[in-house]
Image (cartoon, rainbow, N blue to C red):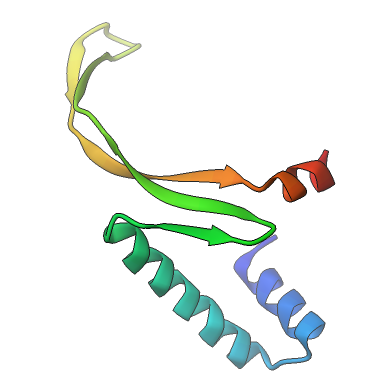
Length: 90
């Protein structure tokens, strides 16, 4: 499903305008970003939990050449699916 498909489906299901749904999704994205940047985590009931995790710097190998490369440390987003959603999809 694309973003436009999601907007249309939510607008129809909630009997709201697409403009309202776009505003909510934009706000949600900003809140999630701010929360994760601050080191927090966000639980979306029935969907899952988003959290930020730090990855240490490491060395890896280029599979084509075999050369060793340095991969810098970075912060990544982790997602853990909710049990209800996992059971519904299975």
